[in-house]
Image (cartoon, rainbow, N blue to C red; front, side, top):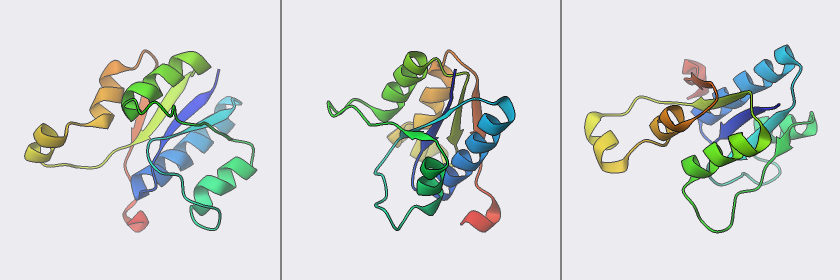
Length: 124
């Protein structure tokens, strides 16, 4: 069983990574990082690259272009994830209607517990 982090290159994604690392260490479980967006190149994205250097597994996205939230949910099942960790942010009602919400899709569609975290105010 693993701890699965849905990672983005945002303050919320970095908060999710921090909490995922802490959960994995506390539970004594491996950490897998699922990229919900572009992965930063070496030299940027220090938190991500530091986690990988510490032993976390950076998963590859399916090149068939499926929706990221859907693919993360499938990956949670395939890896036997014990917990999914994602970052969330406040959005307006209009934004939610027009763009949908990956976080909402993950929370409602997951068969395992989902930990949602907000970025610290000093992450912005």
